Amino acid sequence: MDRAYNGMPAGGLGAEGWLRPWSGGNGGNCVEVRKLPGGRVALRQSAEPDGPALIRTRGEISAFIRGAKAGQADFLLS
Image (tube, rainbow, N blue to C red; front, side, top):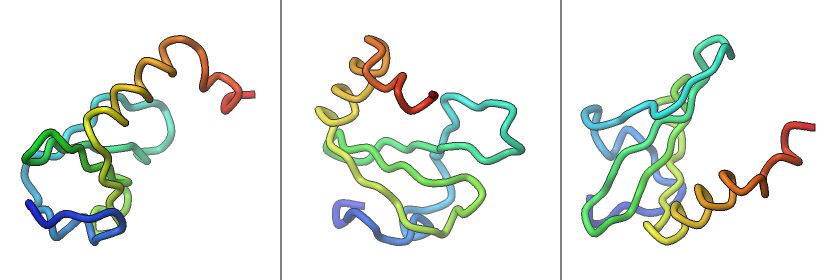
């Protein structure tokens, strides 16, 4: 997992350790996340578990969560 890269097949990160921190009434299409060594985070689409993974740093994830909590992503809902 130290060689994880953005866009790699998520299946290459293994089947264990993926979590769904949030889920809505969207028919089972959820974002799944997994912590990686060194503090990075992998994200994948639950409906496509072997599809591409987005690999982000802890800082990037932190900035996204802070921004979402502050309403900076609300435009995505309108």
